[in-house]
Image (cartoon, rainbow, N blue to C red):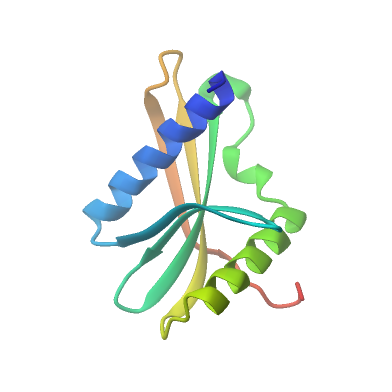
Length: 124
């Protein structure tokens, strides 16, 4: 695995641990379709949550969440729709974004989690 992949795995593992600590059930990780990948799919009593995790070095000077562009959001939505076709759920879908900043030794130095970061309206 390259350094970018290693950093991404650190960010995803950290996000999963935070979600579990808050009572989320992890349904899938790195769910792939022809449209792309969803990093984490989790559930609460009310929501099925599709989580995009963006991890960057703290020295990069750019907020990780800025990488979740409208084009990326559209791919996430299409991937989520395919997931729900294969695994129907009565839960309300929600799209969250986790931003993870790492220090020089790949330790988490900042974590920002935005629930309901974007909606699917107008994308299809």
